[in-house]
Image (cartoon, rainbow, N blue to C red; front, side):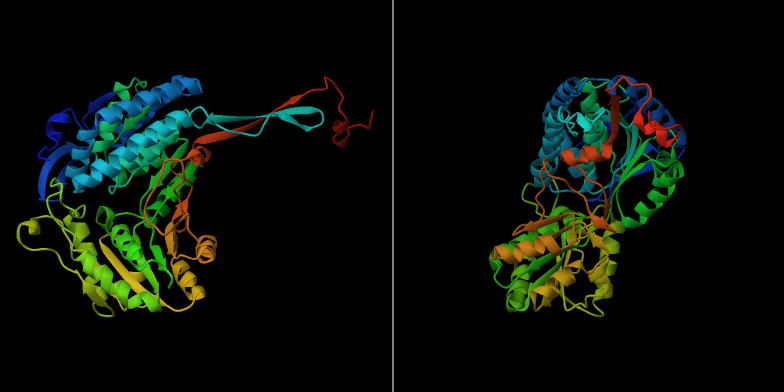
Length: 505
């Protein structure tokens, strides 16, 4: 595919989308967007300032009166049109995502874009199914009804690793439930969030339902989180920044949803299909160049399979093709930036002092040296309490450790602060059943690692945050449950009044 996305032409008016129009930011500071495969600047724009956030929140407030009052069927119809508009934009979305993030075009075309279109189609249907308890007389003298109501204006902050999918995960459940939203993408990856909002406008969603402010976290992000007119904050990113978001959000006592870091264990029991586990580990560790909070990062392999697993993963990693993201044969693209590549390399270089780099552990030379590339890396011999095992690296690095008993394997899997995702590999249903019960994570795959589907929730435990993206469970985040109770007696002097004044009638 030779098509390159021309961001300068498409976003000539600016990288803010407020009240249905692209506009320039007002912070007075410029952001360069760099193609991580080449190191070249492909777009420059004015960052959003606090005034832009205020304007976006005001636009969302104005739109909420109409959108929040629309029927579920009306919102559903609009989201069906939105899904169709995204499908029409598939080629542009894939190219923009690959240019902005360095993703291999086959990943953008076959994973990010269709997944986001499917999310839109799912929430188009889910908009009609806001569930609650049946109306009934739970008290003998009253009828109770549950209402699910939209919260109001949602202020969301998305990360740079999956800009399109994160826009979908933040925006779709919020607006399906009747909220309006201001989304702040990472300032280095604004392209597909802007295209996403433009597709919604083309589909006929009212102006102001979806607003995009492309700005820095310390300015636009913190102002959005702390804004008194924002009723809810949803944040996806690192645990460290998530703590700061939580501190600011508590100042206005707003609803909070946090999807934070991960360090997913990949537990291989001694009766596992070794070939499947090897292929699953390489795919699970290298997806999106390892820049995935659910990526397989810690492989625990029962000792009878350990040596063969290490050898198999090393051999398979050596076949992975690094190259131009727009070449359909490229398997692994660059990291998001040279700074991120250097951060990953730092983890690996420090690990050389206490572990063995089995394969990889270097940036490629030659034509790829100008990009933020790093070779697939396998590390063995590290201690459980070492940095490479405990810390989130966010790169194409897998560390492998042996274990003996099933008890030990599960204990090691749980032995980090994180609890976002995990996988267990075995032919024994009782072993995998135990693993799914005892591994403390928001998702546990069995004999696979990574697949996600719109109908099922995504979210973590422990330092990985709380709340769910995708699925009908996400409406727990984006709706206010209201209990309405009707008196059925028409009696003025009720029996319970005597507990406050007077005697029993």
